[in-house]
Amino acid sequence: VSLHPKIDRVLEVLLRQGGSAKNMMELVTQFNDRVTLKVLKITEEDFVQEGLGPPPVLYCWIALGSEGRREQTLLTDQDNALSFIDVPAEQEEEVKGWFLMFCRRVVDGLVRYGFPRCRGEIMASNPKCCLSESQWQQTFMDWIKGVPNISTLMLTNIFFDFRPLYAEANFPYVLRDRIHEAIERNSHFLHSMAKNSLHNRPPLGFFRQFVVEKSGEHRNELDLKRKGLMPVVDAARIFALDLKIKSTNTLERLEETKRRGILEHQFAAEVREAYSFITRLRITQHLETRAENKEADNFINPERLDNFQRK
Image (cartoon, rainbow, N blue to C red):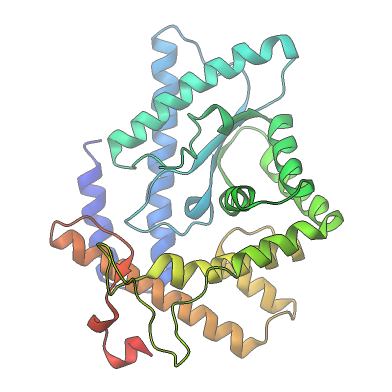
């Protein structure tokens, strides 16, 4: 916990120096991954010292959402899950009980360090996010084979970007292959994901003027993340699921989609540059609000942009 301000200062200096958006996000991800791995190790050691024992079976700590995509910035909360290897039915309750205690301690440790809890409770401390391998596989298959609804599609947008941060078993890699196979047999699911993603439109009016919030605390502002980045993130995810691309990173997904001839080279380059530019703008916004001791968010007033930035 005491290292957090020091790491934060290093990150801030490096981010202010600029560079590619991908490299900046990779940098933040590397720091955050190492912190999480350290918290896992410390928690395991604490449990042994307290007489609770080591992990009863092999497990994987899984990053989700922007953390899973390696696209975190200074404004990030927790999105994580845990899988443990299958055990006999009579042992499952006891094993899951141990891991839930463990996950709550890890999540609390990450909060103490400075990673806020997920408001939607998408965290390993939630019993729905701490499951055996077969339970996780069934969960994903139910999403893909069932009747899609808004709630399910919102969850898949987070969970389908999973990345094993700490893996004692190869389950996450096997699960990725099974998801691709299931989607190939249930194309209606991908159609539903694509249709749902089109509801989130870029904030442009008929004459290409910015459409901003009309009221509330963000009046006359627009959301860089939801309206600027997420349409690209959603499209890249759908391409990845359709083409069986295993990477979870948005720019890597787009690059592979281009390589396979789905995206025209010039268009792919323009999308990549737009995505990178908005990401850099978002990071700059976070740094400025922090310098003013304000709470960072993803909103920006387009009136503050110069003509080049607006274009």
